[in-house]
Length: 313
Figure 1 (tube, helix red, strand yellow):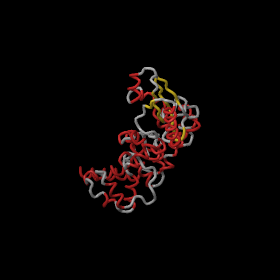
Figure 2: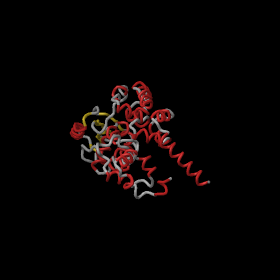
Figure 3: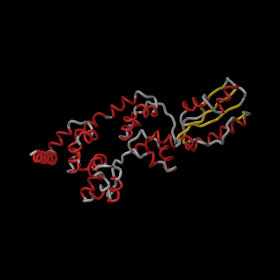
Figure 4: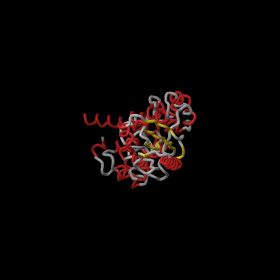
């Protein structure tokens, strides 16, 4: 009698699981959530049914509207007015900075900010000391470089010996290749005027390779969800990571917005499935590969390594 009751109960549960998620029910359920990710985590069955039946965009339509409304240009501009530089904006309000960049509002809403350099633009500066010695350098961020010189290095050591110095900005931020030539010209100009040059290294060094260590690149990459955002926001770190073959490793946490057509081959699905212990975990964490395997009748094969007991549960 007990066995019969449990068997009937199981059938009823299965029938409910298979039949409850109509399109209308999925829409009703989705209205409880603000994002697709929250919907996927808190109600996997409704989310999966919407994906399989290609209802997902309609079911989650309210989420897209809310997102567009909240992250309007005016909202982003109000946030940008809190900061003096793009670098500060990016660090302290990273998500809104990314949305502004994505929607091509960034130049308009940052027009009030102080211009500083980047990987493509540098300016020339000089420290003049009372003993008639000088240090000429180039930088992408004058304030940052000034503070660095006061903590360590050639300039710091010379300040300890000669308290009196004069710091000058010699150029605006200009193209990086032009800045290299200008630095050399200023070094020669100071030499010809009788100054002793304190620079230890050859002019024209922009320091990108030394600055962007693997750890620094990893630290920055951790702030982004996609490679595209990483590349747009920090092209120098992205390119150095690519050149040094670190990119796949430091971007392993990122999501791929859109897989290319026919990306999920049988072998790719097998490779993806090996990351998971159960079919449920496979479905939750990679719906696209799971659905492709199911649709093409590969599911049993690609999940053959998984724990059978857990799969039944």
